Length: 430
Image (cartoon, rainbow, N blue to C red):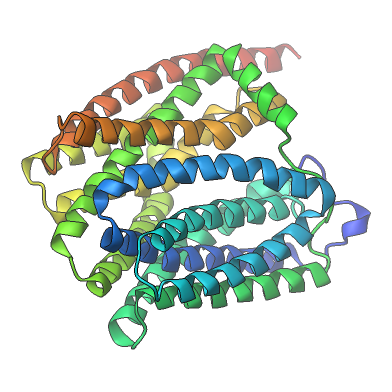
């Protein structure tokens, strides 16, 4: 997320009290993640039914490539329309697309489930990016520091509610997995209405132009390649992205074998997404402040790879559902909580302009490139060479990746200390 460097202009008079604005944004983000957590379990369940787990690495590669192409098209659109217009237009496109895909799912075949899976990834990236893009026009830097944590919590609560609601829909209503698309479309309709209401009350400083241009993304790579500290941060963040597909693959492999019936599988996946968000809230509220306060940044950074390596070894010893779920929670649950808070602290000693450009490159390109690498690694180990044929064989690769990840983090922390001391010294000299 990025804070606005200035207070909102006079042209965007803020009619609402900051607390009320935060409540409305909390609700908006809540609805976005709630919609996504209706779509994610449905997309995974439908792909497992149509193609099985072995197809997932190829779909992940297709998703990453699709997002690469989307970035270019998306910023061209932003060159001609305001962000508010793009957000409202995106909501309409998503609603119509979900209805069309739901109709097409009536017909048997594997193409529509694949398209739906990739489409869900696109919706997740676009809706979240657009939300923070507009939110950045509402708060000044100081207001953002005060209220962004509460706004972000709306997404975690939305994950709990969304996963739980999807499970209830599947278990206690006549609706089936494909019908979750219509539920999500209705939620996006509410998001559209709420966004228009916020625009009506002039909560957004609406303007045109992309936040991250192609030039800035190139400058981002230049900033990374000429800065050892930023390179180490990027390496640590991208190691997490490299091992994440391996964790997802093993978890869904277990789900596929234990729950062959579609509706039961969708309900289990929905409940798990709800649990994942609940764990993130618990860690965010109770664990993260204590770890960062009493043990420091390095401890906060090491929690995720250590927990993931430990849970992966547990999965080696007992390749069943709960060890697989623990491994998945260690990956995503901690990533959304303590890891996110800790990594933001690493950017404090960095010049804001350089930091912004470097983060732009990592967010736009680095994550997707390494997801492709992780997916290719699965294909090579499980299909091209058959080195990893058992449920837990990939866990050894995850453990090795976590060890490398932790070594990189230790190097990052050493650089962080040097830079922090330098910043303090320069501040004192002024």
